[in-house]
Length: 365
Image (cartoon, rainbow, N blue to C red; front, side, top):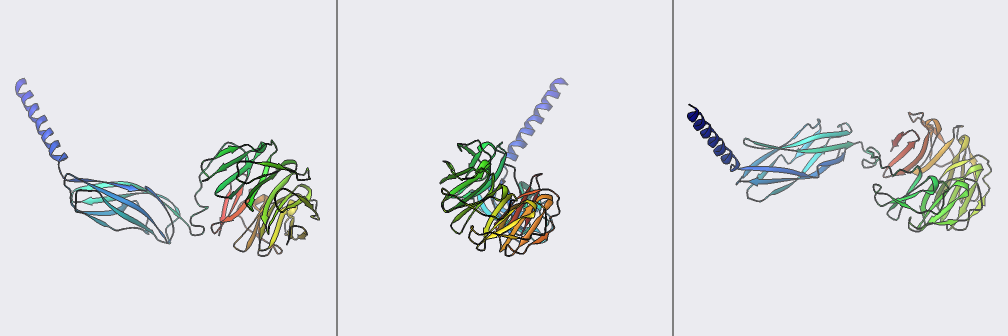
């Protein structure tokens, strides 16, 4: 009986091996996607490449479908013909209807032919129109330095911060620390006329032609400088006690009369006009950086930053303050929906982006 049992077990093992060998030689295929993640605005589409690799002589029509897709997301084409022995590549388009809710969806592309079914994972991030998706999805990049200002020029991001910290990045992801030659805090930075320029503690001003090599300049003031911009062939820096300085080249600086002793923390240029903002809702404008006029903001909240874009000036400040102006003269208070202190605002790619000291990020087209 034992011998018979062993004999039967041997037959079973042989049968299983035969079946396995038969299955391994049956026609089959594999699939892959590149890329495996897509981003698309509502009302637009994204594209990935599907590769079908036939095995053991597989040929035929492979039907394609999406698994886990919300209503309004469709895939095309819905089938691919495999006729040879080599891999078949096919561009796949995911169309996103205008009614699809923004968010990230974890999908699968399902490929079926007869009894064979294969799947490949695909991530789809849907964003609202306005800025090409910019400003809707954020990734934390933390070099480890307290940083207060950032600008872009010559294909380079430059960030500045505490103890003279200066970092540069070609892509916003990988950052390199640079030697600034100072321990003064650097608060503001801009780019103009082929020059990076940083300002900060005790009237500190540094310039660099490439973001890497920095030179200390003489500002002629010991006041902290909080903000700097470039426009109309002129650098304009603003700061403590109403300080305003101008320079045509970043090297030679002239102090200007602002007409206020309020701290000025931000400055921008647009529409032929410099606009500076600061303490107690202070707003000043100048057509040339030399002669300044005080404007009525309608708020006593400290305005920390100002930007220009889309024919509009936008100023932000404490307690979620947001003001807009078409000309820098007449200002309107807007509802931000937050009481966070908003410390920075900029405009780019069709979008205003404001940020706050407690991590708030607001966007507006």
